[in-house]
Length: 94
Image (cartoon, rainbow, N blue to C red; front, side):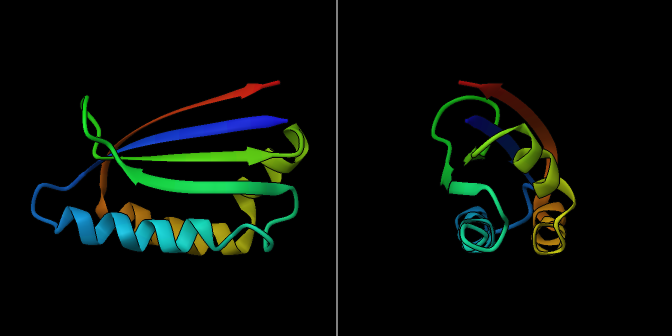
C-alpha cells in the first residue's frame, strides 16, 4: 500500500473554505474511477503553513504513479492549480 499526502497553500484572495470543498469534491470522487486509488480525503488544515491537505491510499506504487497522469485526475488538477500557490507532497509505502 502507498500513502500519498499533499499540502497546499491557497491564494489569499480566494474563498478558502469554498475552494477546499471544490477540491475535495473533485479528488474524493476519483475513488472508483482511478484504478488502484482506494481512499481519498481532503480537509482544511488548522495549524501550519498550509491551508488544505489531501490524504490518499493506493494499492501499490504502480497505481500511485498511474494516478498522476490519469485523465480524470488531470482535470481535477486544473481546479487545484487555480487556487494553489504552494505545495508539498510525500509518499510512503507500507
